[in-house]
Length: 157
Image (cartoon, rainbow, N blue to C red; front, side, top):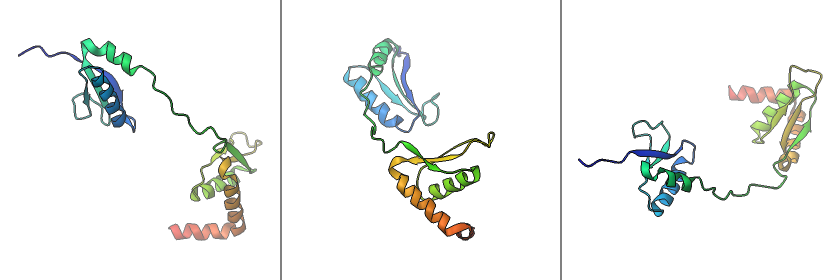
């Protein structure tokens, strides 16, 4: 039986895009004339959910140089629509209640404050693009009062 080359892992990923990314690198390595193979978690020693690219040991340096070449980064959203801006709140209880109302309405938010220093105010922050919507949701919740909250909770039980 002829000697088989030792295979070396040159790429490993377990993130959500691992399969697509590994296939793209595999195609690139094959285009460069390397003997690359893609293995998944069915192969011995590969962690569940992981994809690996392997090449013969003698091609590892070249493969790593190709994979190490930075890829262009796609620009993200540079607008200020996603900047977090505060809603005015005073207490921790109020902040937590507002967070619940906003999350139930599908509005992302963050609570800023600490229980360890009660003299500091709390803030609920929402994306700038959704500030008016958040204010309206909070105002409607306040107008409905605690009875509406109790009714809504009773309906979920």
